[in-house]
Length: 439
Ligand SMILES: Cc1ncc(COP(=O)(O)O)c(C=O)c1O
Image 1: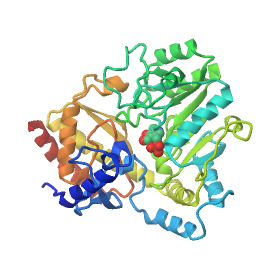
Image 2 (image 1 turned 45 degrees about the vertical axis):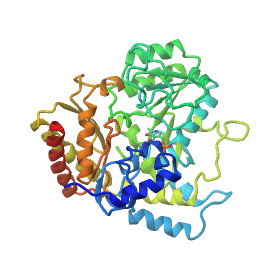
Image 3 (image 1 turned 90 degrees about the horizontal axis):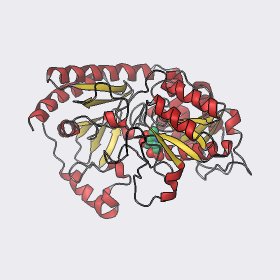
Image 4 (image 1 turned 90 degrees about the vertical axis):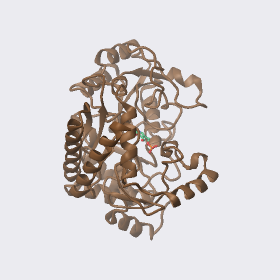
C-alpha cells in the first residue's frame, strides 16, 4: 500500500510560494516530498489534501491529548466565544483554569497565562532572574525550551560532536541571528550527570538564577531521569538559593494529572505548561509557589500580553482539564501506549534489531541499535541507527502512519486512539521494519 499525494504536492507547491519552506514552523518541514498539507483531523486521525487517512502519533508535537477536534473541548470554546473573546479585564474562565491547575499540580499556588510554551519558559526565566537577582540559567544538553535567544542553545538539533567534551559541554547556538553575548548567560550540564551538575552549580552558585529542566527529555527520545536525579536538582537548588524550573510543556497533564511533579514526586518552584493544557488551542501557563510568583507586578517583574488568558484558550483549557481530572483519559492513554510499545518491541525483537525504549507510554521514543546499553543523556541517545529509523518512518508514512522521521521526537498518544488503531500500527510497523532492513 502506497498513498498517492497528487493534490497534497500541488497544494504544498502553493504553500512554498507563499511561506518559507511552505510551513510556518521549521519543525513542520519534512523535505519537499514528505511535507504534508493537512485538510482536517478527527480523533486519532488526520487527512491530507488527497483524503489519505493517517493515524497520528505526532499530534501537533504533543498538544492533542484527547484527539483532534474533540467535541467536549470544541463545544465549550464555541459556547464561550459567543459572548466575546478578549478583554482588558480578568475573565471567570481564567480563574476557573488557574484554580484547576492549582488543584491538579503539586507545588502550584499561583498561575499566570501565556500563549505558547516559548512564552511560558521565557517568562519563567525572567521571574527566576527577578527573584534571585542573578542572571545565569543552567540547562541540559539536548533540551528544547522554546524558540528564543536565551534558550536556543545546544538543543537536540545541534550537530553531533559540536558540543565540546563530555566533562565540560559548551553551548552551541541553534540559529543564526542569536546574539553571541547570550552564550554567557547559559551554563550547560548533561542530563543525569549528577557529579557534573553539582560541580557546575558549586562553581557558579552566586550567578545561577535557575536550573531549567524538562523532567522527561521530550526532544531526545523521551529520556528519563535516573532515580534521584530530580531530587538531586531540588537539593542543589535548595542549597544554593536557585529557582528550580520544571519545563512541563510536554509532560504537563500528559504523564500524570499533576505532570512530572506528581510522577517523580518532586516539586519545583516554577513550572511552564502548554501543549496538553488546551488540546491544541493556544494556551500556556507559568505557575509556581506564592513566594516566587510574588515578584510579578508593576515595579517588579514584568509579565503580560494582549492575548494572555484569552477566552478561546482558557475555555479550551477549562474543558480539557475537566476531562483529564475527572475521567480515566490518562489511564486509557497509558494502556494504549503500552500496547503499542509492547507490539513494537516484539516486531523489533523478531527482526533482530536491537533497541531500547525511553519515556513513558503516553510519550515514548525508541532508539534503534544503540551503541550504549542504557542511554542516559543526549550524546548516548543519539548514537543509535538514525538512518534505519528514518527508513522505517518513511515506509510507515507511505502506509498511513504519521510518526516522526526523526526519532528524537517521541510518539505521542491521544485518548481517541483505539486498540484497533494500535494493532493496525503494529502490523504496519512489522511491514516497515522488514522493508527498511532491505532498503
Ligand atoms: C519542552 C518544551 N518546552 C518548550 C517548548 C516550546 O513550546 P512552543 O512550541 O509552544 O513555543 C516546547 C516545544 O516543543 C517543548 O517541547
